[in-house]
Image (cartoon, rainbow over all chains, first blue to last red; front, side, top):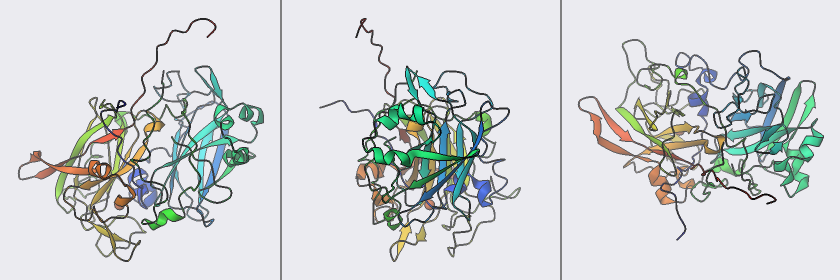
Amino acid sequence: MPYAPKLQESASQTAGPYVHIGCMPNTVGIHGVYDHDLGHEMITGDAQGERIKLEAIVYDGSGTPLKDAMVEIWQADANGVYNSPEDGRPSDPHFTGWGRQHADHDTGVFTFETVKPGAVTYNGVTQAPHVLVWITARGINLGLATRIYFDDETEANAADPFLSRIELKVRVPSLIAKRDGNTYRHEIYLQGDNETIFFDL
Amino acid sequence: MSSGYYPRDLDLHPKAYTPGYRTTVLRSPQKALIGFDGSITEFTGPTFGHNTIGEFDNNLIVNYAKPGESAIGERIMVHGYVLDEEARPVRNTLVEFWQANAGGRYRHKKDTYLAPLDPNFGGCGRTMTRDDGYFQFFTIRPGAYPWPNGKNDWRPAHIHFSVFGTAFAQRLITQMYFEGDPNIAICPIVNTITDKSAIDRLTARLDMHNSRPHDMRAYRFDIVLRGKRSTMFENRKEGN
Ligand SMILES: [Fe+2]
């Protein structure tokens, strides 16, 4: 029999409708327990790189924006380095790389104030500038992982190893945010003809 | 240098489309997930210093209470280890938890259940694991509550958990149940998991050994995250 690890991973369960109580209590009016909500600020000082705003909307199968979801993003700094001991290279001390937001109550837009990530070169492999996105909500049993790339990085995107392995090229645009000034806008579709690409994290 | 994580056994996790839990119908991707070996992006993740955590962050009995008061309900301590699939400790990782109060009501404007809010209970807490992966927190046992799904669905008493691990590949949100609760077996959310042993592993055990006499009972709950692959130290011959 093939080798089996000692333990099995704990099963996921939905984050439910009240995920914000646990992860961003101040945004739902629970004050005085935590000074501030983690992930709210990604830029903590004079971070290098271009300041951008990343705006995303997540649509369900009826075309309705998810307003009760929580979205997290994880990205490299402007030099393409992750603020993580697992990366091992010194990263920008004024940039966390990790953001966590709720949707705007009226529009359903998730807004991240961040810097544009650099291309990431690690172990001889170069990835185009990109952001990892993780979506949890009521009705989502296992957090959904996708990526956001940038529409003004045509050449880098064409050489990106993740985008290159997507067989159905018609689906690639579902991963690319559109620039408008300093804002990149992105739409995520959970279902339908334009269903966004999600990957096995 | 990071070399990746054990592939996730998706049969242990709930499928995206589980119509018994009706909200999944419109929120489940219908196309296959793209299989991807992962990259440095997924093999890294945010870390948090122990100074992130305030003195009472791991005590839901008092962290929202007025001075000298405390939350209403059965006092419990929940503890266990965050481990990876090779039973190695996941150290210094952030564990967040949230729950309803003893009557089954969340402090949230969208929760309109009849059970009253407890003015001394907020419902959130967090802690960091120690070097050996151990965590503990103090709370009151949450109540079961009804929810709109079928005609008469009730959630078993549960605590929600969010865990980071050392890399985004290990990121996990789940729920903890309480041993002996008859609502576990009939809950449509629990039953999105088809593997009975996986449900069993989300069920905390009453731990009388670590209970404090005349004060609080303990529940033991371990969390397992994906295992980290070994680095291959392969010398390559020139030209290969
Ligand atoms: Fe809940």
